[in-house]
Amino acid sequence: MAFDAEAVIRTAHLARISLPTAEVPAVAEQLERIMEMVEALRNVPTGGVGGMAHPLDLEQPLRPDIAQNPDRREALMQNAPAVRDGLFLVPKVIE
Image (tube, rainbow, N blue to C red; front, side, top):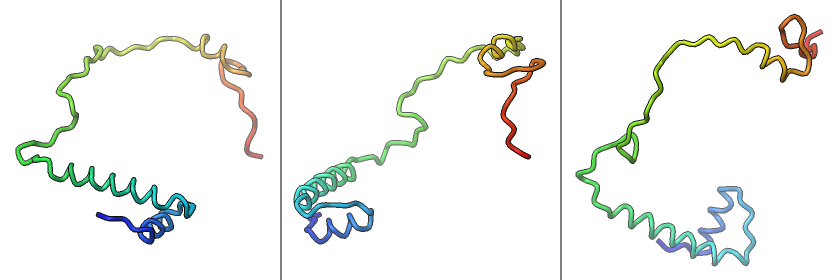
């Protein structure tokens, strides 16, 4: 697919991209190369390839699902700028 200057300028306008006139020929060449790559991908035979959720057939090792209830209140409260009675104090946002 050949991109002439008018097509590049129109595409840049539709994409709301500011494109200096001096760069139009270079962008046209880049777009032509991109379209050549797309055409090469279209010609790849994929008839016997099924769909897949992930490109690699690997399984993620999972940790055991064990219920935990760690008491980390004191450690978390040390990070807070203001605390009262075990609760975070925040600025008043509603009058």
